[in-house]
Amino acid sequence: MGLLFPFLCYAQSLPSFERASYNGKNDTLPYRILFPRNFDPTKKYPLILVLHGAGERGNDNEAQLKYGTQLFLTDTIREKYPAIVVYPQCPKNGWWSNVQMKNDSGKWTWTFVEGGEPTPAMKSLLGLISQLLDKPFIDKKRVYVGGLSMGGMGTFELLRRKPELFAAAFPICGGDNTQNAKIYAKKVPLWVFHGAKDNIVQPEHSIIMVEAIKAAGGNPKFTLYPNDGHNSWDHAFAEPGLMAWLFSHKK
Image 1 (cartoon, helix red, strand yellow):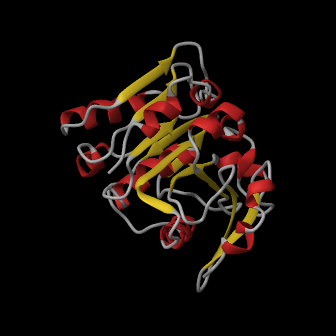
Image 2 (spheres, rainbow, N blue to C red):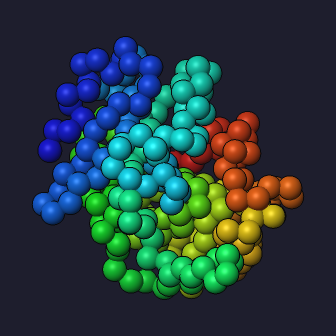
């Protein structure tokens, strides 16, 4: 229950993400956590959740840090946008969202479902989020989520499951069922990213979601990188306005 507190006494002196683990009744989810510099447990800080892609699954509590972490470790970002940043790690054979996938002769097809029970990994993630929100130093009006590929899909699914929670979200090369857009379109500002040459998760998945969100009354930002393949997250995490955009929103 007090997972975070062992870190509080020395979080201020640590330059990088520290190891932790969520332990539910029947599940465990490793994660890494970055505290702000000069962390003060009597203050409230924004929470940023970052969901990794399928290639970073496992239980080493390390692989999920492969992408995006440099943004949050940058001196100017840490000074200007102090936040608690959490990178959970999905199990090796798990999946954040309950999307159905098929690889036919090297071509991936994705079927995003409407509704459905959470996967075991998503169930653990929801448990972790609930535990984090119990901490007095988390600002519940400034909770953000983003992710890449499988994590982009998981980002959309979290918005469907918790539309009242998130102040803003940034799904990268993900997708969702367009019927789900109406659940979060007016409630969560989104900045959607994709590579126009993505042959793993086709850009159409983001394009139709942006249109569905607009049709449901939302006003998403959309950046389609014309020369990017699947690794559009490199450019997304390097967007100079991403953190300012995130922090401009609160519940």
